[in-house]
Length: 119
Image 1 (cartoon, rainbow, N blue to C red):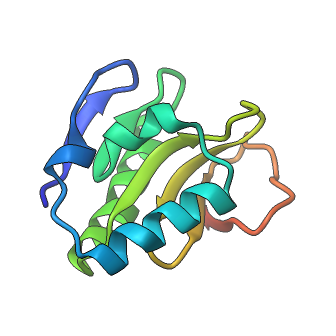
Image 2: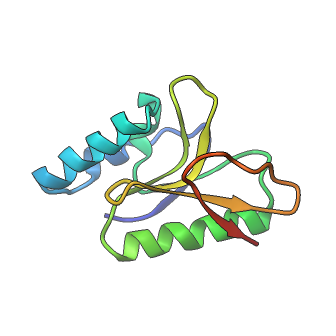
């Protein structure tokens, strides 16, 4: 299970390459349904995605969070989008169902259960 960095529009087959137990796969699907995520992001599991408008500091902090989750042996998504396109998660831990939102001085406060990480 390696970390890959791709542009937001890049296509990777992370889901097919990911090695996970049956219990982990069931938990991942539970989190995906609970968060109402768009299925197009599933191929980007364990892949750090770059959003075109984010700053270098924002991206580096997102990488740091993803690295921590990955080092614990857990899968993650970055730039995960909900089906209704109203919410995008910077980093989402797919086992513990923890959403991380990297905040910069100009960011909008999210009214949900995201953990805010200030840079």
